[in-house]
Image 1 (cartoon, rainbow, N blue to C red):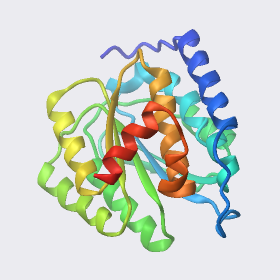
Image 2: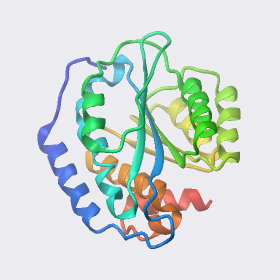
Image 3: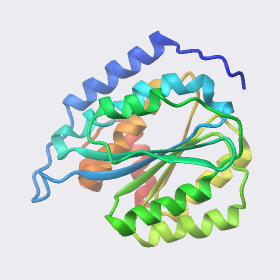
Length: 234
């Protein structure tokens, strides 16, 4: 994939507008945990093949915080891998501006996927303080799927679903991402550079789940939420 940046501002702007409209309609959380924040680990492939879509993703992904204001908020840790054995994790963030600043500082660098490292890091973070969900966005798998499957299953045992979002349509990646999602009791979806609004919906749905659980997700009446619910209940 080309390394030239192509921001497609009109597509991204429309997606953000849609996302903010949905955020205003999110159900309020009424249980005893209303003042607590959900903790979401957000991992991205920052290898060279994703450079063209990185800028578009920055703004959409930052909107996740807005989607959870009525549910008690969201704590998010940004993780990404790039180059050869380079893995980075931010502090736990509490606002969209901090996330956007962290993402804008990233330049995609050629290298191999490090999904196993993401899973290991997720388990370590959960051992320190519980997390509710993990998002992984990528376009390739270059690791042993048996190892990834075992660790995805372990996350499932701890009640940490993986939400695997595939950019593009590579068949091997689809099979691997679907298996990881299934074993963790999570969900899988695909998107491309023409479906920014769909990605915004999916991220908002995961943020809602993280902060409010399945009950809050059921109150979102959009296709992305229903797509995730069907898999979570499966």
